[in-house]
Amino acid sequence: MSEISLVIVIPSYAMGSSIRPTLASITGAVAAWSSHSYTLVLSDSSPDDSPVAAVTQWAAEVGCGLVVDHSDTRRIQKDALNVAFSKPEVAAADIVVVTNDDVLLDVSSINHLVHALTTHPEATIAVGSARPDPQHSAGARRAAAWQLEVVAEIGRRLPPKSLRSEGALWATRGEFAETFRYPLGHGSIADDVALAEHISLHHLTALNVHQAIVYKVPPAGFAEFYQQTRRFKVAVKTTHASGPSLSTRGCAVATAALRNPAGALNYGLYRLGMLGGAGRSAPPPDEQWTRQGSTLR
Image (tube, rainbow, N blue to C red; front, side, top):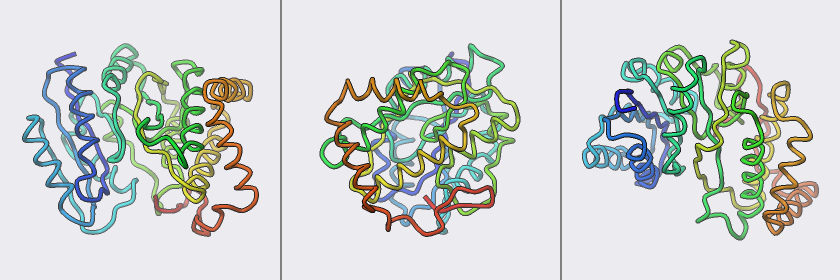
């Protein structure tokens, strides 16, 4: 394990030093995997310099390599990743881990992703599983947190070699990151769909690694919940040919409801609210996922 070269890519649009919790979780996850050195590639277009300053200070403290590409022009997710993937450090890496700037990596997540790729040399990508941050999953966020738990439960029921649509945490080989480019467009209602389509069209092997967990703050309120639900439905519909069966989804929903009935009830009430029009005015009128382009994150 210690001889594997690792690069972590983060497309960043952070506010202030809000990226620090993500960096701290990366420190723990890398340390749990190996004591070998690694490099962080940050593709940043934050409105001020504080995120870059926070990352620079962190890299000096932990002793990892750092590559920063900052733009004063807002980069959408696809553009930010394409900039990062163009770096020679990414192309030369054995394993490239991609994550976001507003999530927390579970301490064993990198170990699970690297192990999956090293034990399956035929695989190109290993996809992790997003779950709600337990520190931000109560109250108004409970409905969206329960929806994330259902998605995680579906992932646990899928076979290891299966196509998933998940963008918050994934790992590839350097060769894949060097050659893969997101399609042109204005952003994405679900960048994960573009990734899943690329894997499917090129007949690549994807690994479902549900043990590799990243925690994210669920959206609060109807407006954010409506947008997340639409993105989830678009992702499932777009990748339905190789996605989970109806029975798998049904069993996942039932299991999650038994485990957290209050969350399921809250989710049901939110969905009823959506039927009544709550949150529908929040998304831009052109928020449709298409090959030509879609909306900003």
